[in-house]
Image 1 (spheres, rainbow, N blue to C red):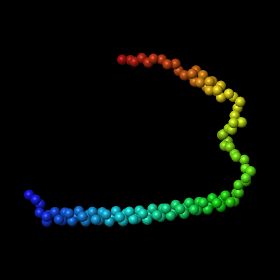
Image 2 (cartoon, rainbow, N blue to C red; image 1 turned 90 degrees about the vertical axis):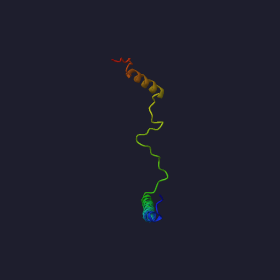
Image 3 (cartoon, rainbow, N blue to C red; image 1 turned 135 degrees about the vertical axis):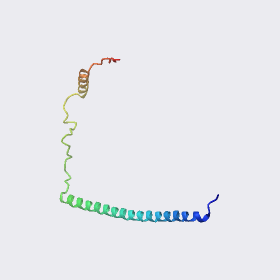
Image 4 (cartoon, rainbow, N blue to C red; image 1 turned 45 degrees about the vertical axis):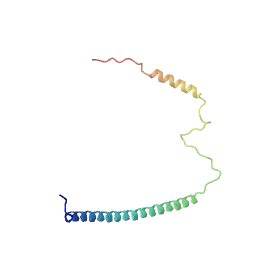
Length: 112
C-alpha cells in the first residue's frame, strides 16, 4: 500500500520549515560571532599599539649607552672564570663514586 501524497506533504513541509529556521538561526549566530571577532581584533590591535607607544616612551627616558659592557648572568661562568680542574678528572672520579655507591646485584629467588 502506497501512502497518499496528502499525508506526506505536511511532514515534508514541517521538515523544510524546521531546516529553514535552523539555517536562519545558524546564520544569525555566525554573524554575531563575526562581529565579536572583529571587536576582539580591533581591541588586540589597539592594545598592541598602546604597548608600543608605552615602550617607546619608557625607552626614550633611558637612552642606551653605546659603551655598555655585556653583562652575564650571576649563575653563568665564562671560560676564564672556571676552575683549573681537569674536566676528564671530574668525569672519572664521578664515575668511580657511582660504581662505589652502586648496590651489588643479587639474584632474586622466587617463593612458590
